[in-house]
Length: 190
View (tube, rainbow, N blue to C red):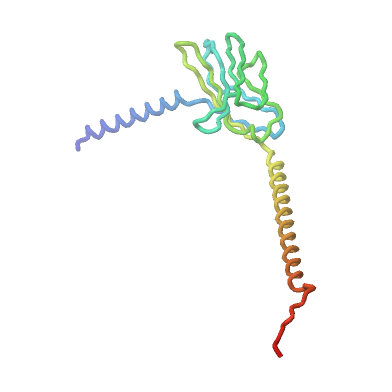
């Protein structure tokens, strides 16, 4: 093996690494993380990188259920100001007319935690953008623990009641068997 081919392989590897790095940078989506106390309002600010001078046609908000499954929240047409709420999203939300890139959800619950995505649809010839926000809800587990404890107490009470009834039936059955008012007579031949 000569030095030329080794150097050539190194250059190819460096070029590949450079292109891979550039690809990751240009295709990386903007992601932000926020933490909100349980019961507080959540303000989702679209984290997509907005290109100056581009007038985006629409924005769509989704909640990520699984990596392959999105739950639509809202579609906003920027040109006509038309707002379409997706059927599958049962949570109320609001936004202000001067800032359609932000979505506000009041009185957060544990179910509001998760990943949200915003999509900015660009006009022809421009690049559409995507942003992702990770929402963590703090302090909601107390209600969950109370709910679990209450369920356990109900189950234990039911189990003890069934056990007590079974015990009473067994004792009653045995009492009747051994304390019968009828006596068995043994007849013997004289």
